[in-house]
Image 1: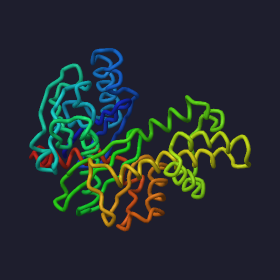
Image 2: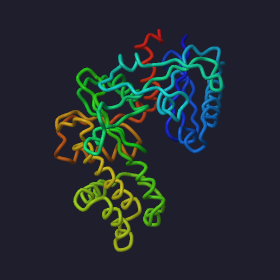
Image 3: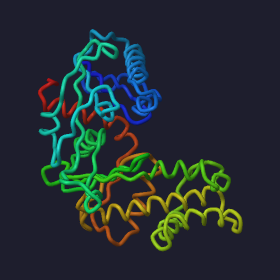
Image 4: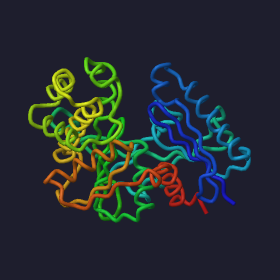
Length: 333
């Protein structure tokens, strides 16, 4: 019987999962991430948060730390603001490259067992300046999610992984299932700021779209691509003041505008190589993945197969992918 702990730390949250023979038996999360290191200037809050969440997970699973055979860390936990800084692996990077890049470190403040960190992946761009900075991008955490999706759905590239969220990621994989590049947008953060901290807060009741309104979503995307994101955002207020459209409709209009801008990134960014016929796999926050899949289906540019990953499948993708990388390293029997 094999017990594995996977730790997935992002900017604001940490998730700890206990696996027994590759099945989830306990899971805990806390609102602690690398943002806390940036704010406080030290790692103490992050260390304590991860330690506390780890202990709660073990308690839920009814086992002790001594019963754990392997601890794996992925995400921003390996950044300069995380528990241990690990350099990115250069694209193209698949299972073999990620496994080779894993490093084991013991951090007594967090866990008595060594933690095996999975590296992030970055694009290869030399002599970065204004002329080519758009081609540069990097990820920490999405690489194991991509590995998890490939494993769970039996995907064979080439394909484009579309992962909307606070920071939306578009990850290109080749015919060898290696990550060849990625590009990031601030879609989710823009959504949050505009919804809560601008003049539109009243028009939206400081709430995101609850359900999809296809008409409003497509209208928002079209407007943003025609007259720009700034004007389209203000039109949310106009829709509130002078029309009968309801709050959820207005929120969909804004969602369409922001995700419509993401489609421009997907089609035109030099950081990835998107072709019209490339199959697209969409996973991420429920309403955002549903909306983005709808926009892609209604855009004549895209002609490849579109797959939307179910909520159930993507529940523990980071842990699944991290275990797959550890297996390639020979750490899992």
